[in-house]
Length: 381
Ligand SMILES: *[C@@H]1O[C@H](CO)[C@@H](O)[C@H](O)[C@H]1NC(C)=O
Ligand SMILES: *[C@@H]1O[C@H](CO)[C@@H](O)[C@H](O)[C@H]1NC(C)=O
Ligand SMILES: *[C@@H]1O[C@H](CO)[C@@H](O)[C@H](O)[C@H]1NC(C)=O
Ligand SMILES: *[C@@H]1O[C@H](CO)[C@@H](O)[C@H](O)[C@H]1NC(C)=O
Ligand SMILES: *[C@@H]1O[C@H](CO)[C@@H](O)[C@H](O)[C@H]1NC(C)=O
Ligand SMILES: *[C@@H]1O[C@H](CO)[C@@H](O)[C@H](O)[C@H]1NC(C)=O
Ligand SMILES: *[C@@H]1O[C@H](CO)[C@@H](O)[C@H](O)[C@H]1NC(C)=O
Ligand SMILES: *[C@@H]1O[C@H](CO)[C@@H](O)[C@H](O)[C@H]1NC(C)=O
Image 1: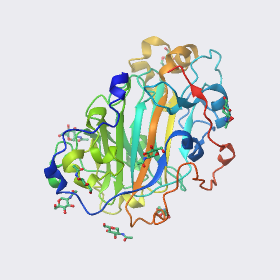
Image 2 (image 1 turned 120 degrees about the horizontal axis):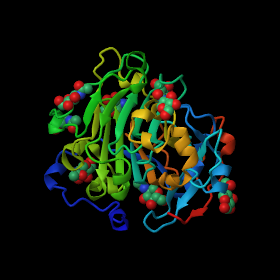
Image 3 (image 1 turned 45 degrees about the horizontal axis):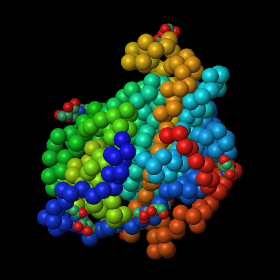
Image 4 (image 1 turned 30 degrees about the vertical axis):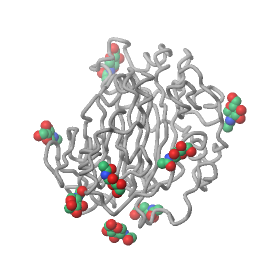
């Protein structure tokens, strides 16, 4: 495993100079770099009731820090990645549920390119429902939209990438079809209606093209995930460790030449509605990492799932088997956010703030939990 991880941002040797000619003049500029100790200055711990009704008790920063649920993964393989975990030692977690973590970025974004280095994720475990996602804010769900970059339950091994919108949003099935400049989507579109009023909670769904979730994903050292939202739509590339494009590795991502080094996206959501644009449905997006346990999706399907033989209910399983959640943690190398220079989302003519000096005013009700980053070491990974 360690040797795979060491490949982290090694450059793909497959770059061809012929692709360079496709480079667009539009280039992305770094506007946020969430990594290391600064990560916890820029994310807030959500400690309210789980909106998906899980058997989970999200803890605040102080509790997370004091109980080892948040910190840095000190094993050499993870190189001080941000650690966000689940309680894996308590037997008595009723009635509230097992302690876990959910963090949300203070900043919000519109059109952007998000690059996340995920070294380990909390999937592949019965009862777990982890997600890395973008949630629109400032309007009742899902009027500001939701983009699930990485999501799944139980022992799922293929990622689900999902959009949720309020009304009138659907996407083309671009699976296997040639698109502009010979690109095509690598994954499979399994549901095309993104709207709550017509599709319900399920949203429009693209499934990944490799074992990009859970146990196998972790064994392979995770991945680097690029999510781009622009006026063309929403695209997600999930790069295995041995094929991270050079422009990403060097901090100058350029998806305009995606027919070259980036290859086709794993998911490509292109609006098929003709009345509105994605911009009307996805805005003020916060970055969220969380690990839910049980909850609506799992409990509705537990009895027919691969996990049913383990316990009569998900809650029984989660309550009585703390040790299985030792592996239910995120190890996040970093998240970088890039925007086009003409974006109105941020004043990017100003110097890019270093992560240490970034102090964005937090108006959230969780602002009281924000503290200076801590350096607790979690040495058991
Ligand atoms: C992609 O675009 C960037 C700048 O736009 C360029 O430097 C690079 O050579 C291009 N090609 C590849 C394969 O990255
Ligand atoms: C496709 O190629 C054309 C011409 O090279 C370019 O103008 C256009 O931006 C490209 N589109 C995409 C999606 O890369
Ligand atoms: C999209 O197209 C692919 C390939 O033809 C097919 O397997 C898949 O079922 C289609 N998805 C939907 C939702 O129709
Ligand atoms: C983000 O910050 C880290 C830590 O300071 C640094 O190593 C990395 O190069 C930065 N990334 C970019 C794209 O600038
Ligand atoms: C699942 O089975 C348990 C008993 O094994 C039962 O109590 C529960 O109601 C069932 N759940 C559903 C959703 O059918
Ligand atoms: C930004 O650039 C895009 C194309 O590169 C253009 O369509 C858009 O109008 C520009 N926006 C502003 C605010 O200049
Ligand atoms: C993002 O889009 C929303 C909705 O259009 C808008 O209200 C908001 O001001 C935009 N944010 C930025 C930073 O431009
Ligand atoms: C986190 O815990 C460490 C010691 O374990 C302590 O030094 C630090 O102040 C704590 N940080 C916060 C924000 O509570």
